[in-house]
Image (cartoon, rainbow, N blue to C red; front, side, top):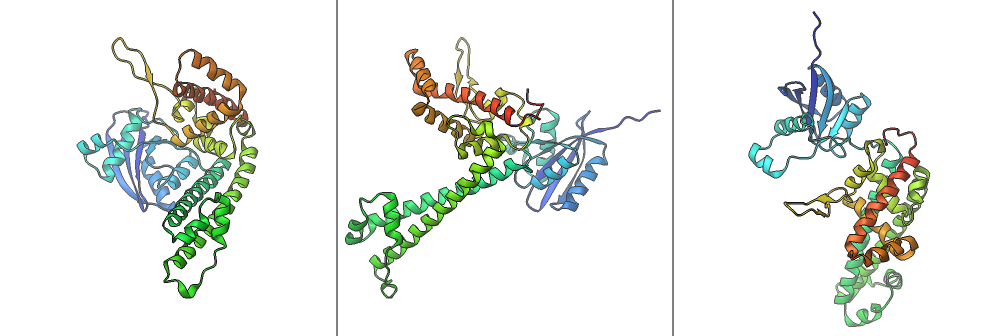
Length: 354
């Protein structure tokens, strides 16, 4: 008599110190068990062994594969286990069912079993991950630079009249240079004017340091993006930052993007049906990766100014009665097609991309 092998679906609720796992029978959906494991290499091995103790592991649903679950995802992926990215339960379901680590782990497994969760997580083990890290760091520096510039503007508006008059009307570059060279009498720091000079000098020098960091990151991104994805980098209007964002959205395993339509959906550039009764229409898709959608928007803006075929297209569609917003949405969708073809060119070994 031949015994059949039980097929198992796993679910994991990830945290900083522990992961909670649940196992379901893939055939009946019956809960086989749940258990907590430490976030350590030994804990990853224990979790995988525990799941395999119930039978053959088909898939594992996991929250936070790019954050708390990154280490476990890398381990399971190396072990040949298919991991599925699971979104957090919506608030209505959470209010109805309650929340706990076992409940979330079981919900992750059931989402995979029901086919609600199907997304393959991005691998973070190649050059695209290096690009993502550099771009994320650059974005943080840019944000801090903007904050420092806003502080400088606020201080100048509130500064004593002689200092205000000296620094008003300068270009941004001249303003930063002038503020960085302000002389401060440390013995008179209790004077508001002296304190304002001290603060302006510190902020201006901070901005100068930020400029150096941004230039350094831009140089590294320029080299990496062109070496990793020359065809994507060659898209008209796609600079290093835009190319880096597109690659970060796709990930080190772009074979998970199974079609051009899937990429459009991921970038928030696919129209969403909004029909009812005798009305047939589509609306703007506000989901997807909003940073990827912004990258498409930057390409569109560049082409509207410098790309003659795009300008001719806009003129034709405007004559047809389309609004500027509608035309931009159409252009974004067309650019997704270019990006998809470029990704296939840059990663020719990925036969899963049809």
